[in-house]
Each structure stands twice: as structure tokens, then as C-alpha cells.
Amino acid sequence: SGYHRYFSHRSFKTSRVFQFLLAFFAMTSSQKGILWWAAHHRKHHRYSDTEDDVHSPTKSGFFWSHVGWIMSTQNDATEVEWVGDFNRFPELRWINRYFLIPPVLLAVTLFLAGGWGVFVWGFVLSTVMLWHGTFVINSLAHLFGRRRYQTTDTSRNSLLLALVTLGEGWHNNHHYYMASVRQGFFWWEIDITFYILRVLSWVRIVRDLRLPPPAILNPRQAVA
Image (cartoon, rainbow, N blue to C red):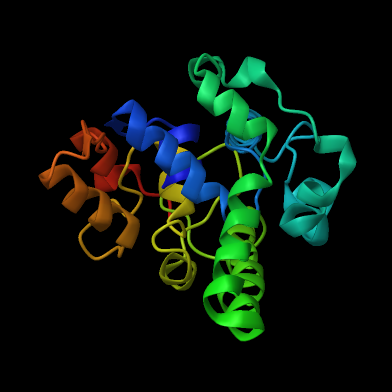
């Protein structure tokens, strides 16, 4: 919810303190800076599945869309023009620049707490699994699944990917109405991230959760 639903799409609001905490803990996943990630994702939505899409499997192939794009040095720059709303916060600019601090602190803490075993299982393997869990949305969610809404890209919905990614697998829903904090639009579409955010809203840590309007949920919009 940090990298994606908040910083990329602003699908809910929160305090400046919790905003920074979201950025910090998201970046422990070793997926680079928060502004860097959000900028690339916003650009992906603008140009999804076109030649200007940074990770389209239909244009650049599976490997590039899955992991090649984030490993390539040609994508190292943070395109701040895409994230002017968050780039105005100095603490976010700082942590985006020093993006290795959160994962290194996590790795060192785990090692000191439990030695090599905790470091390998708690950081190395979990980070690799989280990477692939995130990147299957860029790759597989544009190749396999069902399409409820007619969009200009190849985004698809997948229950399996939604379970793996805590709700991100409802990708066709998301591309049709990206502002929604809830990506599983209907009650039977499991979206664990949304459930967590709903609980946080009850204790007022987050607020103003943006939901899909009734017109979006109209079954006449369905294409498959």
C-alpha cells in the first residue's frame, strides 16, 4: 500500500509522519526510492502497453517486464516531474536519495537479532519472494486472467495473483479505475491490503479512502 496505493495513486490520505513511515517500511523491500517507484508507476499507467511503457510484457518481453527494467541502469533516474506532489517534502527527497538505508537497517537488525539464519530467512529469501510477488503484476497480470473492463492495455484480473500479492491481482479493475483504494471491487474479490487499510481508518491512522463509484461497478461495463 505504500509504494502503490498511496504514493503512486493517492487513494487515501494520512498524516505526514505516517506518510514517512509508509515510505520507510516500503523501502525495506529493496525496490529503490519511494519517489523513483511512484514516478515509474505513474508513467506506466499513462503509457501502459505502449512503446513508452517501462515494463510492458507485450512490448518488451516477459523477463524485461518482470525484473529486467528495475535492474537496468537506464532507469536509475527519478523522474520528479511525475511526482511533484510528493517531491515537495524534503524528508521524502532525502530517503529517496538514500534508498539503501531502510533495507540495510533491516538486514543489520535481523542479523544482530538472530545471526545468519534469521538474516537469510528474514531478509534475503523474504526480499526475493517479495520482489517476485510484486513483479508478477507487471508481467503475468498483463498476460493471464480475465478482463471485466475494456481498457486500452492488456491488464487482467487473477484471484491467484490477488492472493499472492494481498489484493494487487485485480489488475484489470485497477487499470480501469486506478484511484480506488479497493482493487477487489466486489465482495468476493479478496483484497487483503484494502481490509488492512479499512482497519487503519477505524483508528484514524488513514482517512478518506477512495472507493469505486457505483457507475464503475455496473455489470454492463463488463467485457468478459
